[in-house]
Length: 135
Image (cartoon, rainbow, N blue to C red; front, top):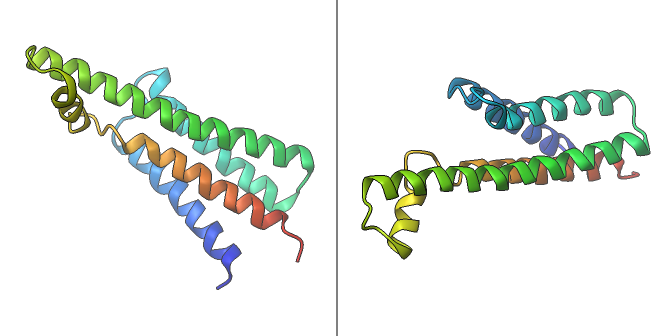
């Protein structure tokens, strides 16, 4: 199996696995929670379009969507960490500094899980490079 097939398969599995997990976790209750599902859906659609038709415009749209996907992951990690921070502070008002930060990382919401969107975007960018590589 060639590198192109491996990257494509990994990218598809990452998208389908992530969107499935978000759905199973009911990660669509408000607009902010729906953002990663929306971006993954758009990425899947563009992968299908790019498998049939490629253009410079579609490549640019795909790149912009990958940047937005990665940004959503960073923003999601911030939101998760912020929610955990507020919860931990409410539970233990005396907590502060490093201890509060560490407790926030291990809080009810997986603080670093949204960063998987960054990994997804990087795999997507690798996919884009490979499909545009002249052989």
